[in-house]
Structures are given as C-alpha cells and as structure tokens.
Image 1: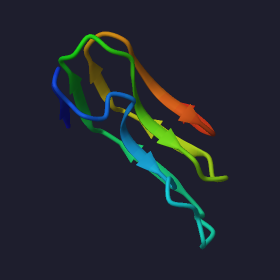
Image 2 (image 1 turned 180 degrees about the vertical axis):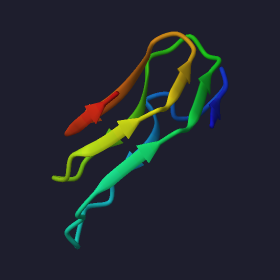
Image 3 (image 1 turned 90 degrees about the horizontal axis):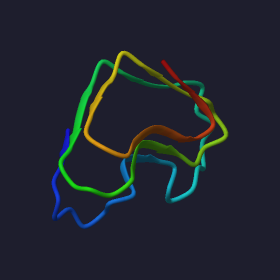
Length: 76
C-alpha cells in the first residue's frame, strides 16, 4: 500500500467498520503488509471502529508520522 503527498484522505490507510457494524466479527488480523507514506502529514495505518481487537503483526511502515493503530487492538 502507498499513500502519496497528494492523497485525498490523509488520516488513515485502512478503515474497518466506518459504516457501522451489523454482524459480530470474531477476529481482525492485518499481517505482513508494506505501507509507504510519502507525504508530510500524520497517518494511521489502521483505524478500527469495531468492538473487536485488531491484531497487527509483521507489517512494515515506512515514512514520517505514521502510527500503526487507532482503536482497539495491538500492533507488533
């Protein structure tokens, strides 16, 4: 995944549950991805709006001002 300096959505790369959640989700895993951000703005790799913990593991995040996760879960 890549987000350039002219990206329209600066705040996050992956959003889970933004439109609401109607079915229970047992597990959320985001693993072994590469995310590069070229712009000089703060960005979350994953924003989790669900009640299920997101598990981020083995992801490579390249660029300035990137935070791995906003919402419930853990990032390793």
